[in-house]
Image (cartoon, rainbow, N blue to C red; front, side, top):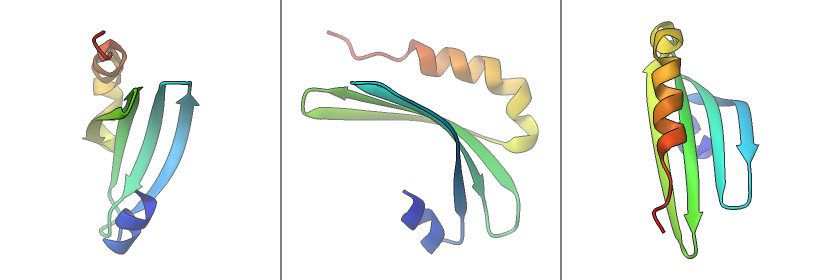
Length: 81
């Protein structure tokens, strides 16, 4: 992921990561070539041989107002058994 972004002129910084056996949550900060920042919260779920990625993005200036809703969405996503 970092290499793809770098090739397109973006940089990415991991702000926080929580990794468990079958899931991980990442808080990332992206900087585009113009210097603007975009934040994301991304959840990776593993279910046997299947993997799922849920990503929510917002410009940094709006993140604080959306953070509660973004956390609710990310935390509500599970693999149905």
